[in-house]
Image (cartoon, rainbow, N blue to C red):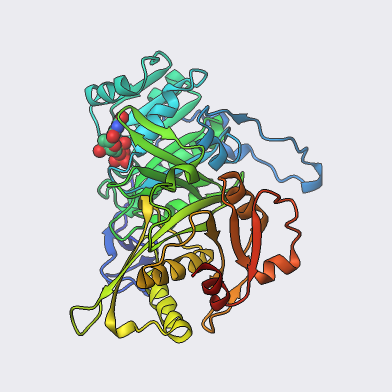
Amino acid sequence: MAKTKTSFVCENCGAGYSKWVGKCSVCGEWNTVKEETPMVEDKETPWLDPNESMLSAKPQCLSDISYEEEPRIDMIDPELNRVLGGGLVRGTFVLLAGEPGIGKSTLVLQTILNAPHLKALYVSGEESARQLKLRADRLSNNQQHCQVLTETCVEHILVESKKINPSLLVIDSIQTVYSSNSESSPGSVGQIREVASILLRYSKTTGIPIMLIGHITKEGSIAGPKVLEHIVDVVLQFEGDKQHMYRLLRAAKNRFGSTAEIGIYEMMGKGLRPVENPSEQLINKRSLGLSGISVACTMEGARSLLIESQALVSSAIYTNPQRSATGFDLRRLNMLLAVLEKRSGFRLVEKDVFLNIAGGIKTNDPAADLAVITSVLSSSLDIAINPGVCLCGEVGLAGEIRAVSRIRQRVSEAERLGFETILCPQGNVDTEDLSFATAIKVIGVSKVEDAFRYLF
Ligand code: TYD
Ligand code: MG
């Protein structure tokens, strides 16, 4: 007879409680502790043969384990391959997380359809077979190697999977799937944990890679995040602004590769298109040369990305001047404005400042500071910055320009895109050999005034 026990679990961090509390003492979140009926003993696992049980594992000495490079499955899509660290490793458990409507289902389905060597089973708990067919028809006609299953019970899914023995199993989405062993509702932490651990066991015993699709809550975290993040090998995050065309795929965790790699896609009428040269598209050559516009040489993970910083400074209409930043941290903008006031006589209280990073891109790279601060000054003075100049450098509180990481990569990307001059932190110019850059002039600056003097 199954034994059930009721307990309370925090939906954010997965911490357990014996009674309800309003605030989770582990992660500090309010109203995240929910009632769960988690464990049922003597589980039935019809998909697992007793003789292939995990209990057969024996301890072995680390030095005796022969090492060979994990064979990777080529996903065809260059961006996805790069983010995965060179393809999908067998037996990997991957979580693809993103906001609803961002394009997760599209990305996975199009990857499968474009990779005919993959015998895939696509399980959907969200869409009907007809809806899947409609979407697949928009993506590709090559559909023979993909089976679809609309089912939400994990035990049934695995029975079907066992029959087909696919080379990739996709679950869309983890929040819709339930296990008959757990009595809590689908999407709750208890169910997610139960389903994920069943799938994990299946993937590790059979070597079939599993891709889970997971929704992100409005606060930006994966529902039941800590629970899933610990279990899976790879967490991929698909992000971007739905209003804008670009989508960024990044690895938040990867046991088989670097988390610095990113993939960039563009949403088109026929699915997502990998963008190989994002900088070329992000910079609008026609707008360069107008006042308030400058180009920043930033890094997004391990990739260099040239972005356009656009500022508009106008006389403040209200006593409280307005500050707005899109794609850039507002507090950092305020700090840069304070530096600007101190260093160039820019009167903060009299101006409204609007800042926009073009193309719907968000940047956290401090190296964008110099471009942001100069675009604000350019708009304020109404003097355009030479369109052949791009900038990189972190601005400190004293107006000093601090060295940035990966300067060689930034300079070569700027050179590749045909910029004539790049303003870099003096600290970088002094310590690194940048003589490889022949087509671009590298100018070291150590204070914001140096940059202003050069540009205006
Ligand atoms: P979807 O992949 O269903 O998002 P998710 O699974 O993350 O919830 O679809 C995302 C959006 O993309 C959807 O609103 C429609 C749009 N879309 C296109 O613009 N072009 C296409 O070819 C497809 C398939 C979808
Ligand atoms: Mg979907």
